[in-house]
Image 1 (cartoon, rainbow, N blue to C red):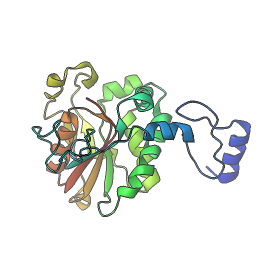
Image 2 (tube, rainbow, N blue to C red; image 1 turned 30 degrees about the horizontal axis):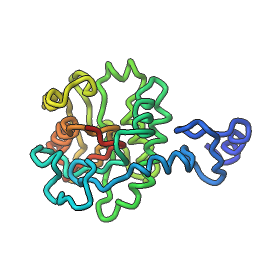
Image 3 (cartoon, rainbow, N blue to C red; image 1 turned 60 degrees about the horizontal axis):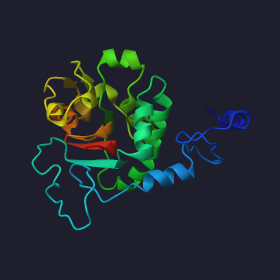
Length: 241
């Protein structure tokens, strides 16, 4: 959007904060969340396990995982999360799943990028790939929240977003409706990856809204690694469980 048109729209209909719906008075750059909402979400930041993203105490040794993941087998090399699945972050996750939540999902991707830009060196990814929804769910909802987050993240960090590299080819029950032990039974053939030859042997950021048991991310990472990805890192808005 050209600058003068953006300024005209801001004058006629000022943007609202995507978190609290109050007016956001940012005149120089795109900022979808007001300072108060950003502070609320950052207040939940804690030291977290680099393997699964779970919050850990300051004195915990997590070089080989924490108590939540030490006995789990993951195919992704590590996890970065913006915050815990609580408070305003939880509200955003649920709102992103609504039929008109696509714009909000992209705004959340922008929010994640503001923190992630400090983690790019030396592990800048070659591509960002969202965890896909099955086409039946996408038709019902109208969009895939993970795709929106990945798009907002990719645009902010100027990294290619490649949703076509990973598809969900089998419909599975919603993970939120399953008990933790049932969530670990995701079919290994539910996802199919295809990475074009010139793009193989790269680092991929696998984006989703929430990581709980890590089963979905593991199955997706296996598919991408099987297509020649060098490394897959899970990037999520929240860590649940």
